[in-house]
Image (cartoon, rainbow, N blue to C red; front, side):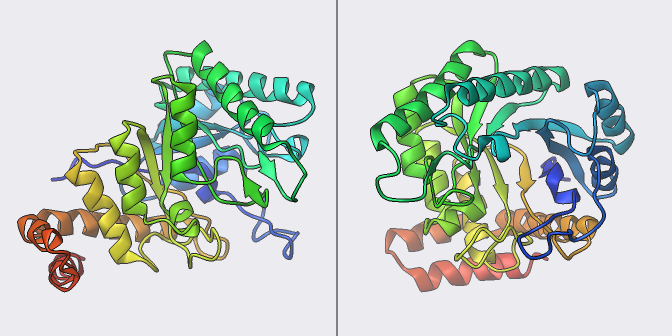
Length: 326
C-alpha cells in the first residue's frame, strides 16, 4: 500500500466571487467550515491554510481543534499579502509602511507555521510587479522583491520559505513570473531556506513544460513543494488535476520520481461551480492512478526511447501504463 500523502489548499473548500458573479458562487464559508469539508475528502491528510484565517476571528487553538476533528494536519501557511491594502505591491510597494506591514504579516505567519509544526511559509506575492511600460524602475523593483524575501528568511532560519511564481494575475506582469527568474532571484538571495513551490498550472500558463520546470528546480536543490491543477494554458483556470493535460501531469510526476523527490502531492483547485469535496476526490483518484501508472511504467524502455528522441515509442509506453491504471 502506498504511503503517498495528498494535500490541498484550504481555499479549495471556500466559496468564490469573480467580476461577474460579485454575489459569489455560494454562501460564504469560514475557515472552520472549509476544514470540515476538507475532512470529508478521501485520502486527504494535510492542508495549506490562508493567514489571517478567513471568515471571522479564530485563534490557532480553534483552528487546531477543527483540524483534529477533521483528521488533518498543516503543511504550510500562506499569508495574504495580495489583498486590497497591498494593491500596489507587498514587498515592492512604493510605500515603506506597506512594506513593513508585509514583513510583519509574514512574520506572524511564520509563528503560525511553528505553532502547527508545518513545513513552510508560502509566499505568493501576486500584487508585486507592474502593469504598464515606465510604471516602475525594474532594477529597484527586483531588488525590493529579493530584499523582502531575504530579510524574512534570514530572520527565520529554522523555517522554509517557498515562492510560488506565476506569470500574471492580479498584476499584468508579476515580479516572480517564471521558474528561471525565480531561481535567479533565489540564487541571488543565497540562503538555504528559500525555495520554490511549483504550481503545475502556473507552469502551463507561462508556456513552460512543468516537467522541465521541476527538473530545473530540482537541479538547483530548490524544489521545496508542489501543487497540481489544470488549465487551458490561456489562463490560470485552476481546474481539476488531470482533466485537460493528463500526459503532461504524468510526465511531471515521472520527473519527480526519477529524481527521488518526495513530498506531498497537493491540490490547488478552484471548483467555482463543482462540489468541492467531489472535485478533490476526483483529482486524488486520478493522482492515485498516476502513481499506479508510474509503478508499472517500463522506465528502461522510456529511457532508451528518450536516448533516441523517439517520441512515438516513449508515448506508447506512457499511454499504456497510465491509461490502464485507473
